[in-house]
Amino acid sequence: MKIGIDLDGVVIDSETTFRTYEEIYDMDILKQNNLVDRTEPKFQARYNWNAEQQKDFCKRYFLQVSKESNLMSGFMATYNRLKKQGHEFVVITARGLLPDGTFMKEMEDDAKRVLNENGILFDKYYWGQKDKLEVCLKENIDIMIDDDWKIIKKLSDNSVKTLYFRDTNLKKLEETECIREVNNWGDIYRKINS
Image 1 (spheres, rainbow, N blue to C red):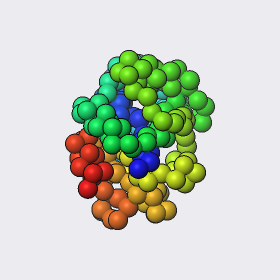
Image 2: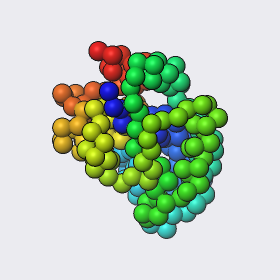
Image 3: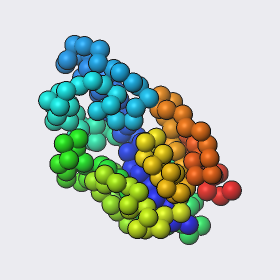
Image 4: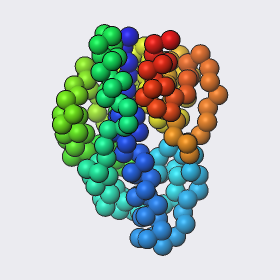
């Protein structure tokens, strides 16, 4: 099976770390409560920050969050088992892509550092991807694992099977033939093997 896999919030626990720093930035730096929708996957929609505030947040915290993040619990054991079964993994990630469309190479480099330190070598990599559907179709992905409900919805609407790695705050989606919800790497192992 050819498995498409997002990094942030799926392999690396950076989404939880991002949300922590988003709250700190909003409350301590901006001294406001700009939270508008906690079910949104990206801070641009979760807070009503203006473009300058979004840029400032990225400058202050993006690389710091990357450096503080670790592998998701249970990832290594599951990944190693799935690789032994012969599954192929294609990384399809927006990592490094900033809200203004520029690419922060240091974010890619730091993800590579985390993967290298843990001996993880995926079969193929697509960094800074804005349109994951295009890559999934090009690569003939059998199933895509992502934590962004908007991406999951777009993929499933185009008949790409998905595993929605849903954090508790994120929007719940109705399960369909193309959407299955998972909350940990044990769930992923079970879904792929059943």
